Image 1: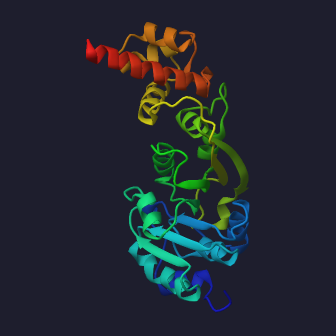
Image 2: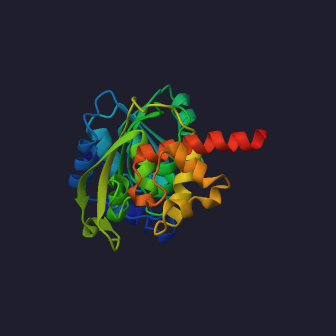
Image 3: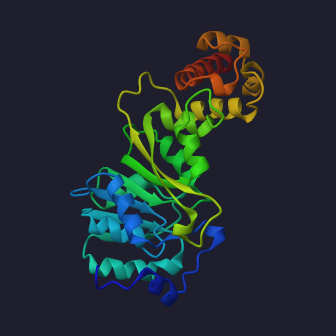
Length: 288
């Protein structure tokens, strides 16, 4: 690590000025990147997938804290040379993949490197953080290819992820994240720690897949039902679900949901029941 140049020099030499269009806010304080790496748990004998490493601050910490391997997916081609310099200091432990994280098949990438499951630890680009999370939560295979997700989000997004029913922040992300995972907020990072500083505080969220997810439900059906319900969150759920194209009265009876409730008052299991009933009723309609 001592042989690696300071991150600010890396940014200057490689002209890595953060691009707003890519949602980039670089974290250069290695004390903070160390703290993120440690919050994810012991890294010895652990394989890590990092999204949006930028100049490689968090990447350095992951390797320094003992990660067996790190696969870093970076869309910004300007960062590749800087990351390859880090790879040279950690032979056979860092692989840099130039790709759009929204478009890759993570399980295939891991499999190509002989890795079954990995931890995801990342300072996610703000503009794709929620999309990436939903992509990972909708994994058809469960348990999924990741053993845990340790992710930096804008604090308001983090609050939505961990929110409980009945709160104003409870919504689509809350249901999808807590359906078959446990979620918790680890700590906040102030805006001034980033380059350039964003207008908001960031928070590290730890998401861990559960094995005991109960009866199965199609992830896409759940996402669709939840999306419709929270699309008009101020209305009673009997109104917000009309766009599903099935009998709402039958749907709510089958799921045992009070039609006068609003979406924010329906728990995760309630939405699972709705999605399962929606799938059955829709199939019955298609067969008739």
